Length: 172
Image (tube, rainbow, N blue to C red; front, side, top):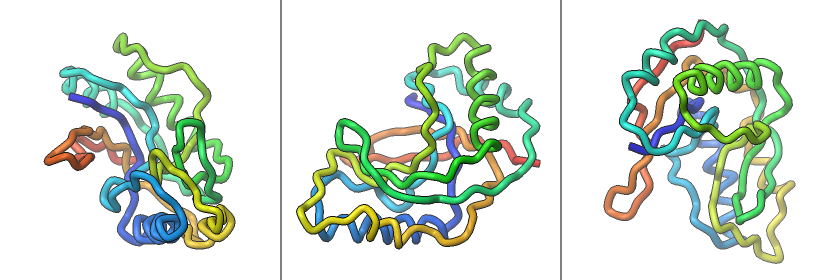
């Protein structure tokens, strides 16, 4: 199974993110994310069948609920179009705690810098009339308050990428 940990969003937040994505679709090309798949990855785990160990490790995390703001859009190399977040120490601390728990289980995790973002499209090619600033105007105006950490499974079903929550740990 291909697994990752994430913060999932409520319907209102996903609707705003999807509006930014739909704006981009009008002026660009790419493989755009399905609305139900929109999330913020904390730690990518990869292929494993060790779900029970991961669930056990996540169940030990005691982290207070907090809010953060989604802000701005941009691209990474390889054509990833994303919505970003304002800097947030709690988000970084939560990611570090999840990372350390999984690393402690012996998972080989990428050691790169954590850049919190929500992937809106892959293989993104902005058209000449596309504006990152205009796309950003569709993002949620109020802070997001996640209530759980989710263990997600990634799979292709009939050629469509689908993310399914298989476990969640409530934030305090």
